[in-house]
Structures are given as structure tokens and as C-alpha cells.
Length: 201
Image 1 (tube, helix red, strand yellow):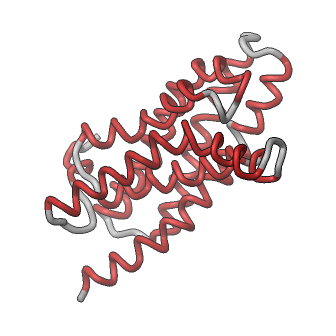
Image 2: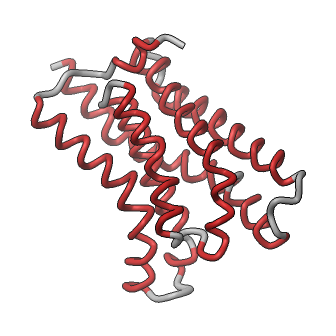
């Protein structure tokens, strides 16, 4: 792995802009998984459409944060912080998976690795090699989902998860990961392309 890849970003920013970006991205990575599901439940009610699908909302925002980290931030410390914060926040809050949250401990290493995979894909292929944004997104999503879903299936072979939790995680670590990562790619493109256009001016 070339460490220089992690020190690249699409353009340089002033120190103030850099700090603001770090704050916003950290907010998305740490605060969103902890509090947004609770806010949704309080505003729209328990078992509402948004409450039931809160993982889709949280996951999309987190994947946006990961992609914007790859595009706009640089350095090991920042990247490691962003890829680890969401799962830590989720474990502490316990709102996304509710009673199944304690079992998320087993999935944390795979989630960290999956998060790193999508960040590194963007760093290497988009930022360093200027490949097509959506092609890179597709590659990143596939690798991330493959890592997380494969790890879940391996762990599940040992009977670690109760039947209901296993059924829930099968969806959460498979199709839901694919949906939220894809949505993160699509929404982040609305930020990436204006930045890219401004860079050329």
C-alpha cells in the first residue's frame, strides 16, 4: 500500500476550510449514528416509515462522510478516525440496531475494513489516477459490501448470532450496505463535481 496515496486530495484548502470540513465530516461520522435515529423517532414517531428505515438514512450519510474524507481530507490520522467513528458511535448509541446492537461488536473489524476499502478506492483511483467518479464508486461499493457480507457469513457459521439477529444482519450487512453505499456515492457526486469544476477555473 502506497502511503502517499492517503496524503492526496483533489485540491488544497485554507486552514479554516480544512477545519470546517473536518468538523462537518466528523459530525456525520460520529453524531449522526448516535442521535439521528432518536431524532427521527421523536419527530416522526416510532414505527414510522423513516424510523423503520433509519439505517438507510444513517448509512447514506456515513458513506457520504467516507467519500468526502477520501476526496477532501488527507493523512492517516484523519482517515482512521473517520472510518472508525461510525461503528463506535453506533455501539455507544445502540439506536440503529436496538436490542441487536451488542452483537455489532463482532462486525466492527469488518466494517472498519469495508470503510477503509471505499476510502482507499477513491484515494487511489479517483484522486491519484483520475478515473471516472462513478466507476470508482461502483468498485468501492462492491469491495466494501463483499468484505462486510463475507465476514458476516463466516462469523455466522459459528452460531454467534441468534436466529433473529442473524436474519436482521443478513439484510443489514448485505443489501442495506449496498444501498446506503450507492446512495452515498450518488449524493457525494453533487459535491464532488462542483469542486472539480471550480478547480479547473
